[in-house]
Length: 309
Ligand SMILES: NC(=O)c1ccc[n+]([C@@H]2O[C@H](COP(=O)([O-])OP(=O)(O)OC[C@H]3O[C@@H](n4cnc5c(N)ncnc54)[C@H](OP(=O)(O)O)[C@@H]3O)[C@@H](O)[C@H]2O)c1
Image (tube, rainbow, N blue to C red; front, side, top):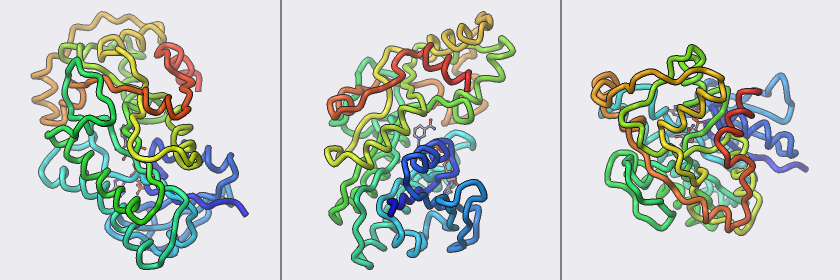
């Protein structure tokens, strides 16, 4: 019998790639999605081992949890697409925190065990700031919105850990993929030769190729040695400016546009402009010491690969 993997937010960028890789590895996959009414099931027309079940971030269907051998939590209101009003901030936080609490409550009530629980987290855990520090996992959370969101997101996952489930939290950097996320948003502009540095351009840009991230999720699910928080980004000196220059180079496009000043981005995007204007490096030592081997550590090779896909 194949193992069943439950994925919250499995329709998103990371989730689509992870679901595909997990199916290839022989898992059955259940994706929790808001796109179906609560508790309603649908089998994928493309893959009979892939099914979808309706939920909301406040309520998890017990039946889906009872089927699962392991779970991954990726759901969360997108942090960049909408202005950070207080209402939006509450949704960004709660849609990440509540699912772990709901899962813990069902596991407790049903006396059910999972072999592993892997929750997304973000490098924003350390705060959205530009500094010369290379953040390691033992450093404290930042005091700003992303830092406190990361802290509470992880603390909720620890409620599942408290039930004796091996739990891993992946503090993810900017996920590079050709079919979504930051890179897909940048590509049309860069393809026109209109890519420009943002702000000072000196903010660091901690990135990870989606294939490496998916492999990290699979390792976290399967390797008994992994437990707790790990940075999931390549440790590098890539800055926003050097990233843009590499992208233009790989696309064979010019890179001459003047900088878009920080105040312009701040006036258009409000507080979330910090996500573009600030960034620090993170250490990848802990995950590598646990045996993870990045396939993509050279940015230009990673971009070349992604643009072929
Ligand atoms: N992509 C990155 O660069 C990056 C970087 C750091 C951390 N992360 C984190 O990693 C996780 C996965 O990232 P991703 O890029 O795959 O995200 P994504 O593409 O935005 O997908 C997230 C999924 O969450 C679900 N969702 C959205 N709003 C929701 C809400 N209010 N309540 C419940 N579910 C909701 C959606 O599924 P349905 O529409 O099917 O319900 C969506 O497909 C996220 O938590 C993200 O914050 C991502």
